[in-house]
Image 1 (cartoon, rainbow, N blue to C red):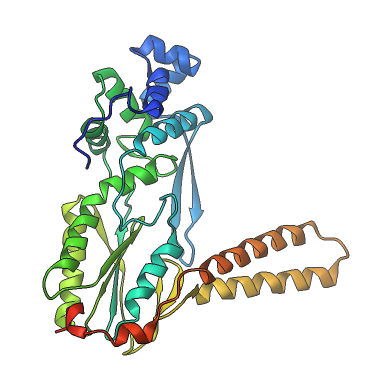
Image 2 (cartoon, one colour):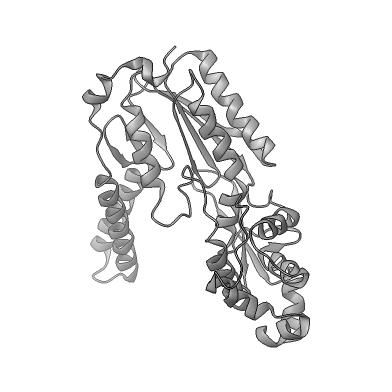
Length: 332
């Protein structure tokens, strides 16, 4: 977490959100439109809650969508908070990074013989962040009055914790998980460990250069320890180990298929695309005009654009990597 305060004079984006917050409740109510709306925001009640199914499971994900006024305030708060940088290991919800950049980073390491991918998810990561943690984050990075700190904290939360559907929540998650990233990056640099750590939102990936069970268990222990120390909970079911070059030549990492020299869409993604194409064929054979076909085609075009993006990720010179001195990669 950044120790240097950022005054409103240095950050115009902070000035913008502080304008809406004002010096007291009266000013805040005036800027948001009414005292009732201001009270609703401060009571963390300005949300519409609904569930969406999680891909590939029977579980649902609860989304807490803010109303339009609160959403606008959260976007302005995000513009101010983005001055506080996330770690280099974070690839989710970061400008210029994505699951494709995470997969490309992993591909560079999977070109090394005896690589093992150790994965772990955090359980209910967003709701795990309390109002006090959000408050501490703002307090540590910006010089705010008591009223400003109280109001900006309440704007980010719902019922005493981080909201799951807010535009500012992903960045707050990345900042709160920064200690996890730093500890696991440091773990890979320890003598004899080696490897690479990546995180995509609540999905943690640790690549180690060994197939030995002892080393794999050490990696799993390091992941769980870092997650628990940061105040999060490891998911008891969402964890995996993939040994490259032993029982597999590739691994699925954050939704992409990664091998030693390329990144492609996952098998699940390709099957879904084939299914959509099949739907278009079937619908086209039954009716001359079907409005759903247009929507299906748009989805296919989006999927093709994603595959093109993955194809443009830098390729790895596998043979060159394998010829390097293995001692430098921390084999044991």
